[in-house]
Image 1 (cartoon, rainbow, N blue to C red):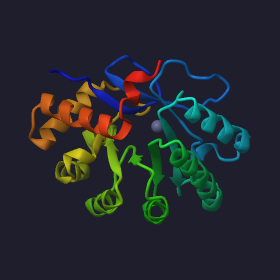
Image 2: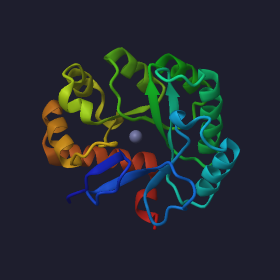
Image 3: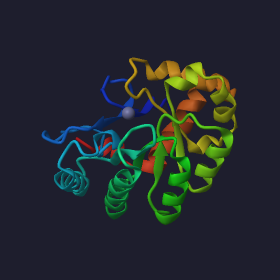
Image 4: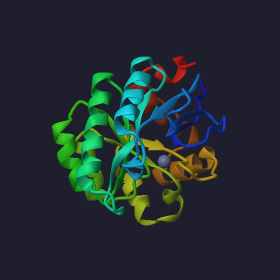
Length: 220
Ligand SMILES: [Zn+2]
């Protein structure tokens, strides 16, 4: 049986395989999509936080979204890390309450996350656009995280060994904001893993169903 490609993080639906589409506008309720919604650290202070958190919780409760995200911490921006952490923790609490996985944006904040993961052991976290080293990868995996790789995998050779060495049941692939075909990332990734494209499709599809259950097919 052939299984579809899985694009675990994109901002635009393209119709290629199963796509988890990230929603960051809260004025229109998404309809019939496999979607994630979250208050991104870049938007801290730019919206009504309480109202946004309420909407995210409501969409989780009604099964309108299948994940909370992207949410996270970014130490490359001006926004205070304490303000970011407070919003992150609130959203992890929503995810825990509704048993949703999370899509994590993490820039220069892996050590913050290791601590947060210890305090929130029951929330599945998918670190999107992972570009850290093998030590960081292993630390995150030890806390039950999965790692998603995108366009950087194609160009940053330091990631190749990291990707090749982490266990198959911990990986996802994504296009994020890039105008790429998910199939092209798969083809490249399968070569790094020394497996066939079809094998990689099965591995990642299994990861999808393990983390999301059947939510990817029941939305809509
Ligand atoms: Zn993104």
